[in-house]
Length: 331
Image (cartoon, rainbow, N blue to C red; front, top):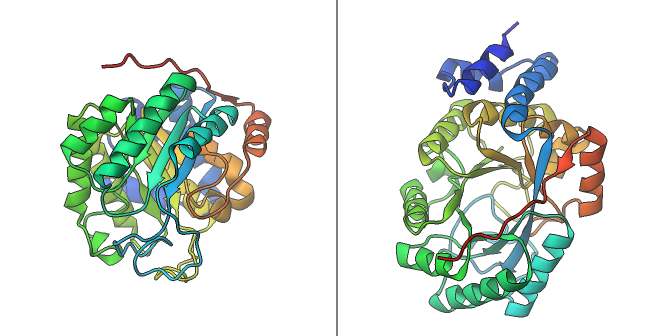
């Protein structure tokens, strides 16, 4: 039997697992799942105790995207029957922040579809963020597509705390899921956001047909990025997208991937993101042994678990929700 606690000890010494050790986590037999989770929890509990951070998404602009991301129901090549609308009015974005705070979310993430935000969209979102910061004690994350540094600086000046821009997969596998922008384009946006003084949220998607080596490469690439938060999405295949038949994940597989990311990112917020309900099913609570964060109230175009049910799951585990938030000093 593999000594998974040895992996935990390496993580606690800030030593990365080797490629062979990383693959051993992903390829662990299902009957090793409990000792693997126990080892991952040793790392998680050291840096995050038994607390859970909640986050809520706001799909502030839906559909009509020019990109061909194969996993996305909002892409140019998707025929999925989703709601399509332009940027929400400012008041609706503010109301979303109020709902997020009422859901005990520590962070409210404003997301728009499209390759890059328009100047007027940046202005509208910045105005909404300024209004939110005056009223609601919540952190703001924005996921707006590819951005240059001046755009990122405008968001920072408005009070945005963090930008989400996922690497999604390994650099080698990226052309298999998207051809309209490159892996390097994504790294450039992250660089621009960091240069503007914004925190970085960047993660990936599991279950798109990638190999184990791609997941290890993604986790290692994120070690170079050093994000403040890593959302790990589990593909929820949507009819009308190129990956509609890619429904191959098991709860055990998802848990092993979460454990790997905890070992390789011991101090980083690790969030169970899209596809949690579809793929983890009845094993959802076990995911909080490696991860310390999750979404409430749904995702961009797919429903999720209402906040009160999430609160109950966290309480049943004997964990607590972290709701402390100090407004950052403007500057």
